[in-house]
Length: 185
Image (cartoon, rainbow, N blue to C red; front, side, top):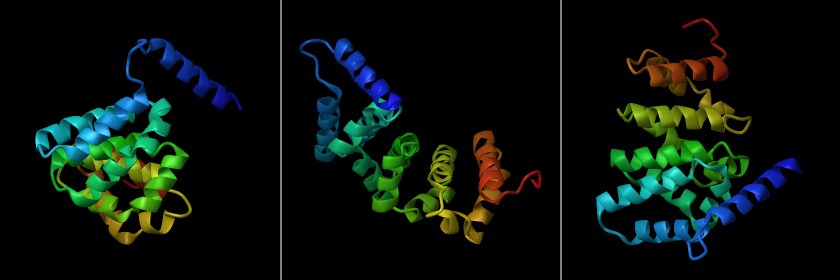
């Protein structure tokens, strides 16, 4: 009950901050989705995806993000793109959105773990860090077997020795939380 009041209060605050003739968030996100879908420029796609990922930081946008298809764009990029800039922004968006149980369920239903775990070896530390964070947040009874596989364990062990501290620390958290390898690193 209290969470609902907080969301409603936040929506009221957003309405107060939106100029009278201003575009509301849902409309703005919808315009960004249209731009992403209709542009042929890779640079424009990257810019739009970066903007969409920025909106994923704020939980008040989660409903709008689902409603206008932003989450679907992130999932599409992870499944179909190889461009690191696009993957960076898509995984950053997913990383922020997967904290919400409805978004997590949607991600698992429409993307699954395979495209995500495939990115663990993408050679971009930012993307790898995003993926490690996503997998930590998506870990549950449903995903347990896949996220505790020997193959994933070896990749995570390798990442725990990364020179990149962010990747190394996230991998150690994964090993500790998922594989229960306390103090064995």
